[in-house]
Amino acid sequence: MNVWELFHLPALDYQLTKVEVGLREAVESPEPFLSQVAGHLVDAGGKRLRPALLLAAASTCRPAMSAPSPDVEEDLVLGAISVELVHMGSLYHDDVIDEASSRRGVESANARWGNLVAVLAGDFLLARASEIAAGLGTEVVRVLARTIGKLCQGEMSQLRYAYTMARPESAYLEAISAKTASLLSASARIGALVAGASPAEVEALSRFGHAFGMAFQIWDDVRDLLCTEEELGKPAGHDMLEGTYTLPVIRALADPTTGPELAALLGGPLELPELAKARDLVLSTGAVGSSITEGRRWADLAAEALAVPMAGPLSTDGAPARAFGGDSQVRETLAGLAHRLLDDLAVRAG
Image (cartoon, rainbow, N blue to C red; front, top):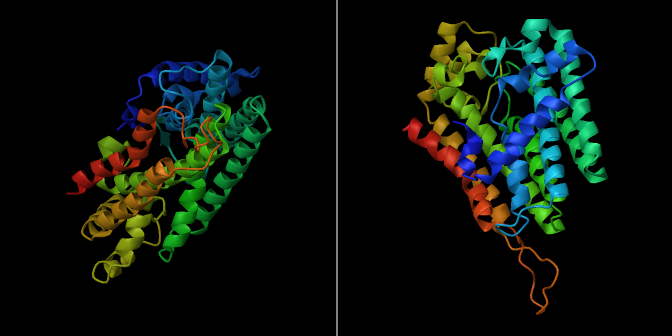
């Protein structure tokens, strides 16, 4: 499922085309080999969820059918490029840490060129993201820098609990908040800032991005267990293979009937037959259903962030201004996005 297509926002097509062109320009370097390695994941494609979220968030801050000025549109595209560069830079680093052999259907940079080259390429992408963000103002740079720090914190937390069956749910939620939700929140916030949103709109969209990011990661973690290898591009249950025990696994381990048998398999590297058995055990419990319910809790918070009226400047007649003066259709689409993802999972889970 290409997540951004769920936005149903045709105007994104044009802007995302400009983002693609900008991404390819951003990875160019006087050192040809660096350009080749840094452009490896750009060429592999991707959902471009973070740029799409930034652009959609910005459109909620201006009247429907009203196009941004050329300067603002250019800045929005630059903001979208910067958040995607941060995401891709983190993927290069993640693949080194995980010793991944593939990414987005192609050989990973570390597998093809080695860990040192992959780390340097990831650093280059983060540097380019910061350089681009610097042209968008101090606050945008601050948001991006803080987010990069959170990504590191999240990765460290995940490493600390690798192959640990005693990983508490609170640690899992903290990790996905830092690793996933922080950048989605930053994307929505930067979109609002660049669009010239009111402080209330900026804060609401930031809360939305974080809650949506939490729901999105839970969706992705459940999907790792429910979908087939053909759909995922990797073995189903791959997170367990890498020693990352996500919410459904944590909850299955707590099941008094199935938990002990599952625990006997986990705690170390798995062969594929053991992985298949562990996955079947998780799916035999109510852990997937309860994880989807947890995802819905965050989906509700995401919708609420865009629905709660907020005090703004007074209008000419003395009444409080609307919380959002932008495109209500886009806002409604964003508000329901996480639930639509989880609905698809619920149908698959039966």
